[in-house]
Each structure stands twice: as C-alpha cells, then as structure tokens.
Image (cartoon, rainbow, N blue to C red; front, side, top):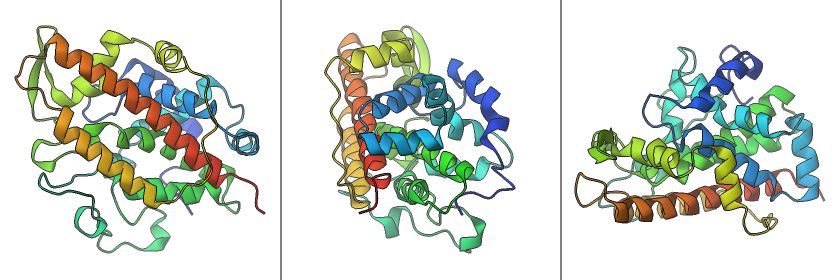
Length: 286
C-alpha cells in the first residue's frame, strides 16, 4: 500500500542509524537537521486532540521523545541507502523564479511509467508526497508498519516544506550551489539554513522545544484539506524569494538574527501544520 515492502520492510532495521543521525548529516538538503525534525514532532504531539493522540499512540508505541527522534528523521536515513535513494525528490519542490504559485502539472507531474503497484507516490515532490502519506496514515486497512512509515514521512516532509529553500529554485539546487561565509567559515547557503544557524543558536532539540513551547500549545483545528499543502508551498516559496538570500556572501549579525527568527517561526508552523493533518486524518469516524 504505502511503500514497497522489499525496500522498507521494517523501520526497526534503521533504528540505530536514525539515532546516529541525531548528530547531523554531512550531505546536502537534510532540512532543519535532526534536532529541528525532532522538535517539530514533539511540538506537534503537544497539539493533538485526545482522540488523535490515542490513535497515534497505537501506531507509534511507545509515543516517546526518542520515538519522535527516530520516526521524524527516518526518511533522511533511508534515502542514504541504495534501496531508498529514489525517495530523494520527495524532500523538496522546485518552482520557477518568476512563478507566483505552485503548479502540480508544471512543478510535480506524475512520474512517467508510474503504476499503483509500485507502492510509491506517483508525484515525486514534497508537496504531493505530504498528501499521499496523509492518506496512508489514515488507512485503517494498512499494516502497523505502513502507518508508522506514513507518520514518519509526514513528520519529516511537513518540516521540509516549511524550510524556505526546500521550496526554492532548481538553478541553484535550493541554495546548495551558493557559498557564503558564516562565523568566518565557508558554508553553502542551504547548510546555513538547515544546520549551521540552528547549531549556533540552539544546539539541541531540547533547547528548540523549550524555546518554542513558551506559549501553551493549542489543539490544531481538525479541518484540514490537501489543498492547504499547496498554500504552504506557496508561502515557503515566497519566503525563499524574499528572505533566504543574503545581500552579500558574508553572513552578518543582522541577517543571522532575522534568519533565526524566521527559522523559529517556520519550525513552529511546521509543528502546527503536522498536528493539523494528524488531528484531521486520525479523528474518529462519525
């Protein structure tokens, strides 16, 4: 149903790698780093309605912070394997610089030769993958393993989509091809947003959760629709155009501070959006 069982037979074989991933990756385009993804999952759980929380506890059991760390970083782990490298395009969406909004037909068309029996999303981009795995999470006929994987993908990809450069431009590979200087060292712009600034200002998911849990969490409304993902895509794309690129190659304190404020905003928004999907898809049937 959700994933090819030959490829993703069991998430447990990746558990050790997922835990090791908490120290961070060196490859490009790993959004927010492991700390950011973990914080998003934990903050989302705090916003679940009781019925959705109970259902998720039956899928992710036990529903601990360590379980969030494993699940929400699992997609980055499996894409580093030979069997899972096909999934790399699910982590981002490229939109033309002059485009005002995301277009499925232009930016994420169905893959040529795709067949339903491949058990993979027909559209290989973050926007459409989120919609696909939301359906998988709600599917009561799927196996427990398939629903766990759907949750893991959702947690991770909702985080990815809210990092502006994951809704950026193909010509610079979401900022991966742009070198900047941060704290006197060269780093690509994508890494600056994913890791470097978070490492400098936070350093751990515990700090992020503490910083972003200042206000009492509110239960996200359960009225979610797939069309909202298009809106989130457009918002991130606009942020990429307006705020993600520094005026010079040297990252100064003003740009770093503004970027840090935006990162915290987007991590909080990702947690809210994830809770919105879970509350909607796991609500009791009438």
